Image (tube, rainbow, N blue to C red):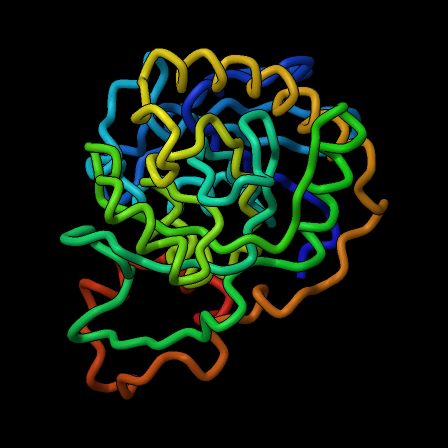
Length: 289
């Protein structure tokens, strides 16, 4: 296992660049899954290598359902990432999670449809464990980094992933609250599932922009207000990336997600589709030797 940290940062709405990155260079990374959302910004903060990818592309070109999640995760794997921290704008389903709060997600409910959700399929079947979908160590480090950057932090939230691009109806928003969900967004899935398949420990920092539409006395979600809050959140998010890099332990020790594919490949070696195996060269690099 790699004892050095290479942190991949996936930037959500309002986060299209990283401050204070040394030796910064945008590089195109080709993948067999198509083009990623954008080039990847290579650089470092101190001794820690950083790889930054804006999820929607610079200029916010890509709608939530069009984000090429497989290409993005594959590209970050090929760029040498050991861990991924995703930053995503979210709506709040709880009164105590006010706009401006940074929420560390630890569970997901998936309500997306028609998005490719796996690197595997017929000819190369795999089933990875996803009961605990985020990395506890990375989430704790991210929470501490946001606090160090002056952000207001809440932990252990459940994220409802909706298809979009429309915001929720009031009935949907109230239903998701009844289900026990705390925040809602459009992009964390299948991203988190694919990170697990790629054996990349993953943490999600949800940046609350609004109260969604569940409150009787509340106005409907307004894009202008969401954009304004996302911009304010972005300043703290950028500072938290630097704080995270400074706080990492000198050496990276293994975590369970590093070996997520152990025992997960179900198709017998002789029956595997060579084309799909080749397409997954980066994902399978460790288990394939």
